[in-house]
Length: 486
Image (cartoon, rainbow, N blue to C red; front, side, top):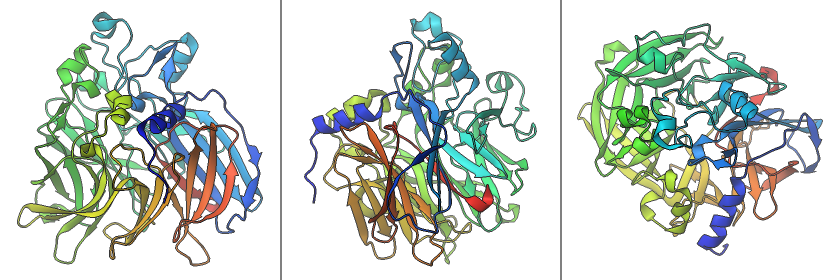
């Protein structure tokens, strides 16, 4: 067992991994150490913030960095690497001027109130996820529309409106603020049908929750619209055969303060996460009745690991729950002042729509985030979940391990990297019939070096590794695309 790192060491690694990347590489061949599995033949795309400052002014929130895509082409002939920043309109304008020109989720422009007053078009950094669907590679950010990328060169092709269907149809001021509707960074794909379901949140009177369906060819339809009593921070959702489920925390935006420039959007959040979250259950079929709100445990959920229907009619969600919302505006302070209330853990929430109640139990004492699993059709349970993690005694959200949890038995297997920092694991199937493989990009502390590890999914042991030509900043989400699908 590795010794627990002290806060000074952890702060040093966090500072390293949040450095702005300055180089872009095109189709560079990388040497492989070990034996690359024959069944891994495709492209691994990953997105995350890559630039953390402009004109000497550092972004005040880690979610504000410009989107940066990595592309790892892995196959029988070896590994080839490319990386590009997403050339959004905002990125190009700021690159040209060399300074900040847009307000962001957690950063106002320098210059105080006068510089931010009524500046209501916020920067879309396109930095949260990247997906392949319907012949499109899309860089996603939940507060705005997706950006389409060339899957071979990573060139930015522009905002994706799905043939105009994401154009905002609502009257001003909604259409002024968001000419193109937002498309969340956490769509859900049904591997059986090829259908993608996603959502967007639009402020106004009323606040609107929009439900999109995208067929296997990339055709989008706005399937449902629901009024919300509060404009809350909703990052993810669950989908089963019967239900769409949104966990609504008491983390609500004060839109007037944000629009006036008095606060950033994240700074305007009114946090009351000691109050119960609410599960908004929306039937996928109108025959099942009307949407309903059910009180759940308090706290905040960024990610839903899985959702499935139980035989008794209940909805089951495995979620990563924070007892209270982590204030990333004070990012360094999070690692200076331990607080067990901001440690995320994997919990199982069982919601009974008939009785209108929800119960929750913890699945593991280890901290967990960035959950992933083998894909299954909507409504099917996944016994094995993979995630990033940390030991039970850690009280700061420094997730230095890759974990495998059997949700039936509670068996947890953990591969801890000490001060090295792994990224979200990505599951890849094993055509030979095994449990599969996990890909993760590990930042090597003190070396400014990032390494791709190919790990056996069953025991988390390294099968092959590849050293990238530069150290990568912290990443968020990605996707694996088999070569036959490109």
